[in-house]
Length: 413
Image 1 (cartoon, rainbow, N blue to C red):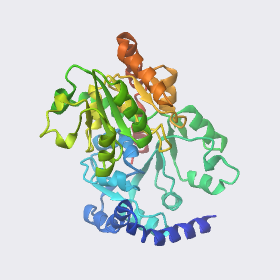
Image 2 (image 1 turned 30 degrees about the vertical axis):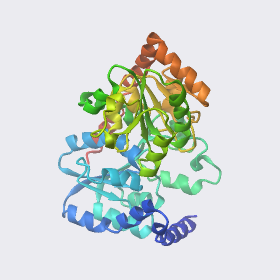
Image 3 (image 1 turned 120 degrees about the vertical axis):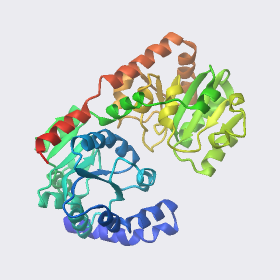
């Protein structure tokens, strides 16, 4: 199986060279990996001690931020190396100030894995949530480098727990310890004979709670919202927007709306604006328009959403209406607002739990959205009570970061 995996990876590495012809994103994927070796050589000197964090994309990076910060505080003599697999993560965070060096992860061939780890020589490797690259993990195991998984989340339908998943189960043997989000993940790992497992929770709770200590004021939001009820729609996809736009065009009196699409390409933003029948302004147009007169503000940039949630009376989080995957509900919940999502959320334990607590509502149709949102808008007591549930959900689930740091301190890296 390992030989077949290596052959497939090698074949994929050749085919990927053609992909930039068809996708700008894949162009970044290919070009970014060409400079990895030089970037690392320019950053690291002989004798440098390093801690390596690997994240699939932007969401996993945000999960890793609390641990990266604490690691820098506790181990100031170590250089922090962050790697990404996806361009959507790397391109946004390539200039982050937390890491000493941020790079793409080269494709998972035996040669790439050996060269990368030989350059880094990490004292410990920390993988965030997902990403199980066999050759990298086998090389870490071969070199006796402690390797941990943080905020891991396992489901019984994953290949590790299938009768044919022996090869991928073998990759899990490379981990020294698993820090998982829930008891189900621990139970599944124990069923396949892994005992070094701790239910630590999700570091995202620590991450979003830290947001409250920051300055979340935005002048343009104060101008736009004024004293009106505000729905903030974060990380939306077309499936989400069809329901939201139906409401805005038909039932939107005395309400302000923020739409922050997941993809902020010019075409996507223009398509949203074209469908709206009420006065709408783009964030990029705020200097040329009196935004206080507008009912909808479309955020056609990135990096503002976590602060914008501070202005929400209710938040709609995208991704769950279609099959793309629900986006982060915790960024809004930390500000104590009710959450509305789409119908597909069963793979997201935080959404399932918050729904059980009645701090979150799932809708499948425009009619269901209208009913839920109008209830929250018109019943002030109900809306406030629901928001308190969201707030307490964050407060009661903090602490995963310290549990991981205690383990790193015991390693005496």
